[in-house]
Image 1 (cartoon, rainbow over the protein chains, first blue to last red):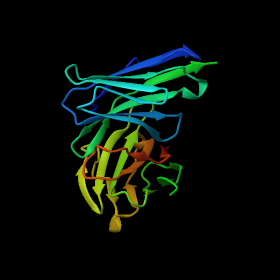
Image 2: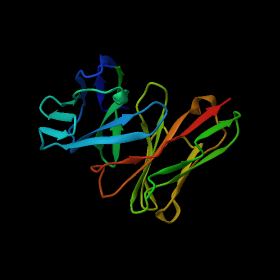
Image 3: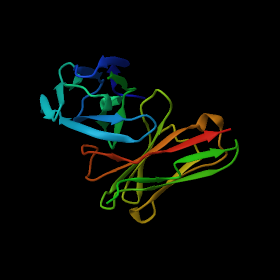
Length: 109
Length: 115
């Protein structure tokens, strides 16, 4: 079963715009991670936020975590065509990471 | 350090045949995971190794699936008597530490097509 659910399922924006993706989860977590996957490739880790953190930045990425609402958001600022990919949130559940179904982001140039 | 390596990248097999995939994790990583991903879905957990010990298996992992990690190094995933429903991308990942609270590094995956 999948712990996290991303919203929206798909997002299409123009280059230069910001993209926001949301993730909701069901049970308590120690940390939440975001990954990117280019078509047909493996996943690349973007950022990890721990349950005692509320916001984290990495370059053009900003992640927020609201444990009371069991939700997280990933903001990509000043998007580029190369940001076109699927984005997944993953939460820790025991020994493993549990992934959502992902958000497909398309950035048009 | 060349990252996580998976072989083969693609495999086409006839229904009923056995297939074996290999994963070479990052050398100092003690944790190794296998995931399966179908089109439009996120990766689904199959199994997890801490060093050479297989500590958890998903209910998705039927008795036709077996995984090993001899000596805590590379890992193999074997599927016996393949079925069309086994067609998917099989992803391997490795990480270090005692819990799933560190960055996992994924390989490029093995895409299996059962015809």
